[in-house]
Image (cartoon, rainbow, N blue to C red; front, side, top):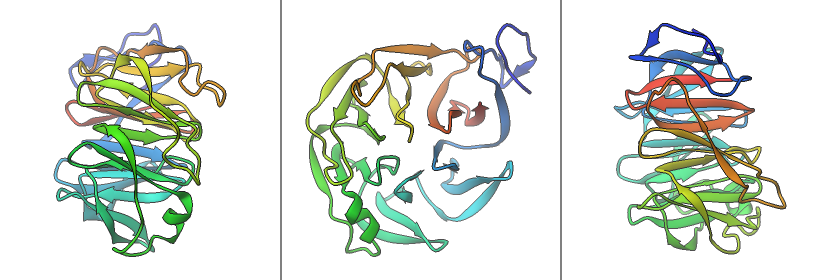
Length: 258
């Protein structure tokens, strides 16, 4: 069922859906996921029981393995399990990598980043990512501060801490994944995602979805937030790739907007 501005629709998941952006069309699609990530034209997700899926030709295809969080981007497909072990998808199989993380992101400029169970922040340079093939690799770089969620794009990395305070890390490069410094950004979000095109979306503690506007290579922090209202439905996860949004509701339903 398509959702566009200024029209009335039947209820889906208990809410009448409407989108505030006139050029955005959203559909409830099959399946249930607790977390989803899109990048490099691919979409991966994890269900409530840890099953992993990827989107192919309009359907979900089961991927062997059990993860708590999965990510896909220029750095490939990575994930972490319930014990915080790190995995990389190589040749159709998951290879155990070095490190322990609770959340991981492969959306940067060939780098991998994430946070551990103590909210400590780490990143891996592009050359280390490329050569990572076993449990003895890669080498991680510790970034000062503490965050519960961290996501990188071509211009910068964005994160939120335990109090939902938002920060951006500029001057992140493939050979210098740690960037330069933290810049506090207005607002409050419980999770945040950076697309490979530099766009930034997030969800707050009330389940509202926001987009950061004004982001450029010269101004990686952007200028303001725009709320994207999809019929008052509460969401817990959002990701963006190729100008398409993939969202997971608090009921684990999946919404696709393009």
